[in-house]
Length: 210
Image 1 (cartoon, rainbow, N blue to C red):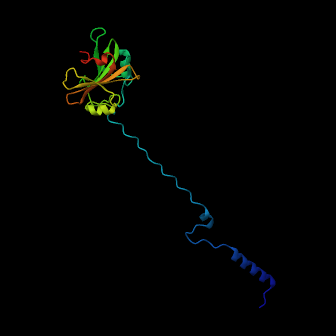
Image 2 (cartoon, helix red, strand yellow; image 1 turned 180 degrees about the horizontal axis):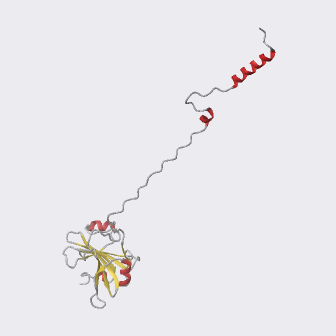
Image 3 (spheres, rainbow, N blue to C red; image 1 turned 60 degrees about the horizontal axis):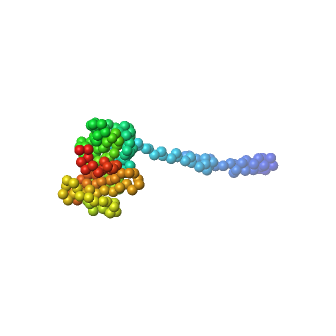
């Protein structure tokens, strides 16, 4: 049977449309346009920070001892200035007017371990008899004479101890830092038993305020 030209043209056009139509995506398959889009970057994880736990006890002070004084307490300052600089409770009462006496922090069990000398209403010296404090230059109670000699490069001046046979006083001046001096006391075994820093003449009081 002979087809009419009009039907033949319509058949060809229909075939062309079917060939140009894109194939439907398979089940579960994302459209091509969507697949070409870059995936959205996941947000970076935020590190959790935990604040450090508070210290149970305050750390021991380091580097407080100096030729000019102890911490904010300056040698030569008035008693009230020294107390204000300490900013804590100090035990001790003056004797006769202008006399020598010691002030000690309330936590000190033995005054010989740590004390501040007052004379003429001035802070003139501090005494240390414990290894918990470090003297200017690094010396400590318990060190040997040889250790001190190395620390202070042979600059310590030696004089015999007044009461301990074989003991010594080993001293060194501040050399322009302050008009003060550091004095170590050693026992008969050559070990440091105490040390002090102070102004002259108080730093050379062998018996302290006695």
